[in-house]
Image (tube, rainbow, N blue to C red; front, side, top):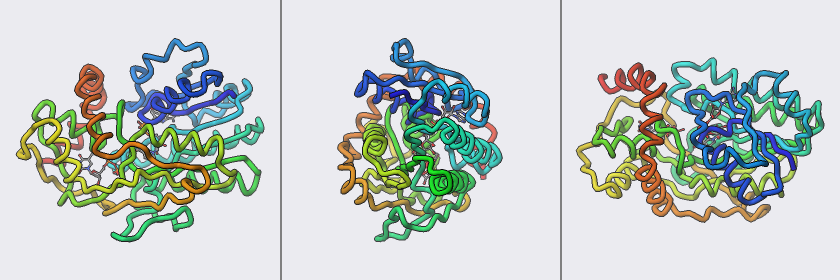
Length: 338
Ligand code: NAD
Ligand code: TYD
């Protein structure tokens, strides 16, 4: 099998490529990534020389380039490439529409033109919007996104559906909950708080900190994507949750506990606008049809993640001294001053 994995230099994409090369040594993988601020070839340094892996720097919106690659005999496209941070989508929604919607359309068009066997769109639980306590989103729930990020992901999902319905592109969608684990860019809650706490910097908790997310260890998501890729039904959507709901303050306190740092590092800051109170999905479909079950519990996964950031200090120190800093100074410091 010859796969085009897009956005493979980011957090989940790099974990997925590593997972693929380990579990399917006969597969050929081409990684197409634009290397935005979130793309980092250091994430793949241990596998960059593998004979069945190749990296190409480029944009999924570049139709000519995408067609050149897909025409090389690609059978499968797995699309991770995206702008992914909700907070950034408040300041620069256009780049989210470009990559997440236009880029997806370019990939679908190539999938159609070159008659690929499978197209997997990596989506998110955020497309469903916020859900009350006690309720759970299913694959049939309405799409009610509240941020430019989630709206652009929902738009992409609808395009994928339309290419399946109209042109019979063999497309499937995965919607996972919040991922965490090695190589996550330290702008997202867990890696930001671990790396801040390690240098005794404040942990900016938005609002009351009682927002709830369902956390999935990245390797479990990779296993779920693998199942969807090999066993999923064309045209279907599969929710892949971790079954581990926690408030942001619970996550923060666990991080502080594992690092033996004081709770005085917690600083409540101005809330994110239209902040979704809770994400939670029912994942019975993936369990029943594909045998999906997350294997790593939150406490175990969080401990492993903290360990990874402790032993890979040079990775995140380099990341945090680059592009990240410019953004942080421009937006986060303003937020903290309010
Ligand atoms: P990330 O921000 O770590 O990585 C995104 C990658 O895409 C980067 O390597 C970046 O360089 C690349 N990219 C961005 N624009 C591109 C373009 N135009 N062309 C080519 N490459 C481009 O993101 P992630 O957290 O690894 O998320 C991967 C996918 O999973 C995304 O589609 C995201 O919406 C989805 N997802 C993420 C989570 C999560 O918790 N992180 C949860 C559910 C779904
Ligand atoms: P994030 O990691 O950005 O993921 P998402 O918004 O896509 O779920 O945020 C997870 C939760 O943590 C969310 O409720 C916002 C909150 N949060 C903070 O309280 N402080 C922060 O500095 C960040 C980045 C997030």
